[in-house]
Amino acid sequence: MAKLQHPTTLLVMAGYLIVSFLCSFLLLSNSVTCMYDDFQQNSWDQVPVQTREMISNINSQPSASWQAVEYPQFKGKSLADMTNLLGALNVNENDLKGEVMDKDNSTNTPLSDSRYLTILRLRDFPTQFDAREQWPQCIRSIKNQKNCGSCWAFSASSVLADRFCIKSGGKVNVDLSPQFMVSCSGQNNGCNGGFFDATWRFLVSVGTVSEACVPYVSFGGAVPACNVKSCGVPGQKSPFYRAGSARKLEGMLDIMADLKANGPIQVAMGVYRDFYSYKSGVYHHVSGRYVGGHAVKIVGWGYDSASKLPYWICANSWGEDWGIKGYFWILRGRGECGIGKMVWSGKPAL
Image (cartoon, rainbow, N blue to C red):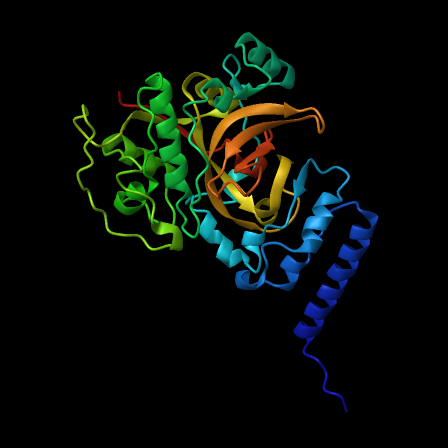
């Protein structure tokens, strides 16, 4: 007599068959995205970061506002491998949900769409703004953090470097060192991630040095000891570039005003599996599980006439062969991936 299966096993098998059937049906109807490989493979080291099926499904969505691509540098990588490309700590999925709302000062209630648009016009906010066009000589080139969760250091050092150049009228135009921050910021965790508030406290109290002084070497995840060596610059008393002040920005109006007046800002976002395959267009989460928190740099905003969607322009730290030459557009004004919930900027000490 054949041995009966344990009830739990039968339940799991039945669940898998139901999910598989529903996914197949829904995919054929092209009504939703249903990625059940996340259901099949619970272990992060078994879930591939990209599959041709997932990418094809994203690109075939009638309502898709962005395009996905299979990146050769991610071939054979699992989600566990890809967490090393992140590094923003205390960025939890639940904390990032919901709208990023501005409030009417007179009523302390969220602004209506009409009131919001009126304020944008009164404050002379353009439909499109790009710091790369506003200050072309000051915006840092795209870097690559590689196999180290140092996005917090890359984005913050890049923001501060941009702002030094902008505030000085181009006189202080130098790449700043994320490696110094990774090795020397004791309240952060090096290649295992960092905190926005601790990062900016460090930049205010200590600062960082030039990239030429302490170049990036943590490509493979190893963090050398902090070595404060002399990096003197002719005519400059200290080798450190500090932030004179730093603050957390609140709401889209605050973000846009600070960006337009002072330059790029640092922002946290939640990364889902499909984001790794982003190629172009206005990104919004379509499929795949939440992977972790990431820190990037907002350089501007715009409006996509094709999809009729507003977006932020962001600089990533995964190299120029990812996304739009290292940049990406992400849906603006609807709390997509928590963008806008955790935003910091600082003013350079000049």
